[in-house]
Length: 511
Image (cartoon, rainbow, N blue to C red; front, side, top):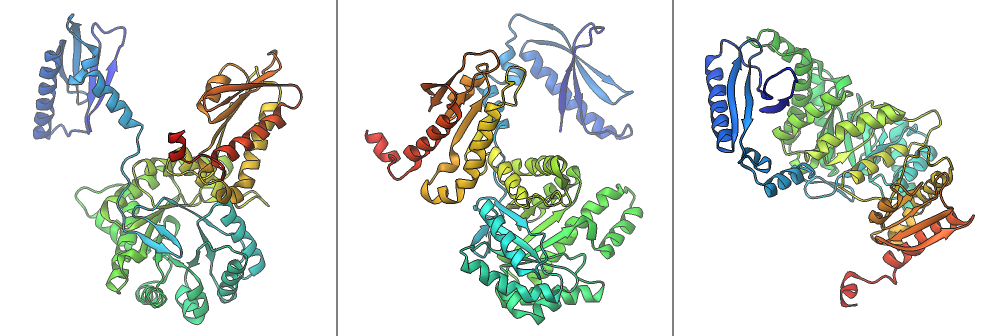
């Protein structure tokens, strides 16, 4: 792809446009010729727009430059490269849009559809010992209440497999119908065979082709799992993981690369091994009779750029539904930032049908945090709406009082805690926007953009707080009870807009 930059070094007589192409071998005269032909065409186009330009080739860096010598009076900067103002605005607008969603074959997991036209699904995983049914039921219920639409549990030994059906039954009895995904490694084929009630209770099996078995056993054990999945009409996720890659496949690709005339980096070979492992396993499952609408692929690595590269390539080479996740993302802000950065780029490109944020919780930390982060990632990018958004300023020297911080926190916590009931009571409340601002600088403007917003008095400001509803100022709150009064106004707004007594769009049009 051609890239353009404008250099304005004050020591140069004329500014210059620098066009950087992919690296051109200095012996590749055909490529050099093609590059110059393109540049010549560009020069003609610029001159027709009023640019006085001069073309020069710099052999030392294998770049070519266009020097802007002089602009005549007829030059219109809004018509750069032949585009009028409207076209430029349209181009800018396109940058703010997500790429079209990648078309994938939809897969039904329990009562949840993954891929196709279905919304991107949030998944999570327990960290309890599945053999401890009480702890696992409690955590699955908490994850589901937080908004997880699929929950994965570890099935690693007979004691765990023996409890799966019991866990499913207890969840059903308390009204938690979230699909359960069984995570199998090494002896998954044996556990599924020995505990048919486990195989039947799960809604999906997750298998890793890198640790199903080795050599001849690998094919046999993989086939057994696929056969059992078909027997019980269950989908599978073939999850390739960077840390447990098929060593036989990796060795073969490394050997092929070392003997190639144009070898690539070891990292590139590993990425290719991950992709091939998933694709070959998917093809193997189909050869064994499994339909494509029962297969989800994942290719998880722990580095941001590797994840982007792997999934961007994988998405072009198949139409399987894809599960996204940065494996071993880490703790705290590191895990959140790296997961959001990597998956955000892929989601923007239309890649991803389910996501999981693999956070390492603090000792005794809240496991539901990974669900909240996944939801917030999808919501801030405009893919889904889960909970009302509370916008709040970060604070500065104008906001030495903690009132706005406490109010924003109280409202956010109240909203999240109330959402399970609100989803039923107030349909559409997920799209609510609330603004809690700490002073009058940006406060009124942000409040006008929100559905309901308040600007609290900053340091040295008059102790009054204007409140805006649907872009219009409706009142000014004063006194010690500002926070409580505003919280009541938020609840009243929700009731009036989303409650049973709210006007429907059709009736509103008639009013």
